Length: 237
Length: 237
Image (cartoon, rainbow over all chains, first blue to last red):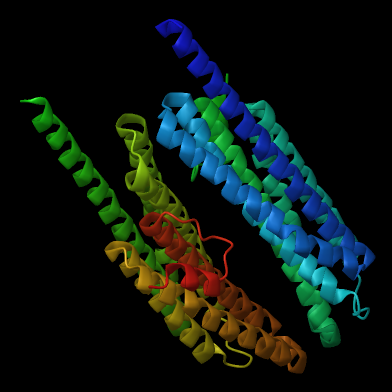
């Protein structure tokens, strides 16, 4: 082969490798989304078996984490990517870390679900947790879509969504504390609700992180620690 | 200059760059440790001014985060590090991310401290939080030392320490819930104690992460998602 052919072949292979890694991140994200959904279902329906399955499956999320990380390290060592290729690899490393931790939060919710099934006393805030959970699960799905299509507008929309999640979370906290003070016997159950809500709120934060990595990859700008208003100004037009 | 001289000069410069970055990570770590200590002091002494200062200083932690990250990206793009140099850069990127989030937890504790000063009712668990806080602050200092000296034994010792932190945290949770059920008026204050304890417990987890990155850098083995027993077996002798 001539040099240009070799270079072209090399570059095609490299692009294929990068596409494959992005595909794996999306697969990992789908697994994490399923874990979250099943943990939330278990919390609602009170089926400890399903909760235990979520806990047992967490190792698969961890396996993706280690595997994708190794592939990224190999690419950095052998291919020496620069510019947007390098940014993609770094965005993948960070996204994977956040997905892994979303998986951990799903496992925490599942642990709560495995435990709370026997506690039927106290006020029923299940609908509220279900609503918050549905919003956060949608947010995760949309963050994954933004990652898959490298869609800046969707990424900004997801980050904006987090403000609503935070408000809903704060409301649920206040309500839970009021119920606690009214009926102290319900405290153990309410604490589980509080921990579940906290996990969901943190998942929302991590979805925002993923969206920031997408902006970093596509636009080459690190927007962490930047307000949403400033981000929108920067990327407007 | 002859080629070997140029190579040598290049390599010396590269090593100097890597040393400088490691130095900056340690500086960032010291800033984060100071933030944590001051947040804990504010929680104990009830001085909202000090708490506000911690909140106001968080931007400095974030500035380190972005700056070190940019330097790492530049090194990856221009120097194409391989083997242990590459592992060091990746370990720095991940350590910085965890330090930044330890800074966030310190800010959360400071927010609690800024709020709780006016609430004097309820059981006094301050000593318990102070004890847990002291342990976690020491853990952070030791994790930073392990990072500075690339000390595997210290890294494993710090990771082992986390088990004790978790037990102390669990005990504090149980005790807080008992107090809540006994005296519902103390719930708001106790919730602040619970959130502070939770932040401290998460800081302990992040110190463990940093120690895992040290093992990864020094030994070239990714030990995340591996039990402590297995880690010790792997690195024994």
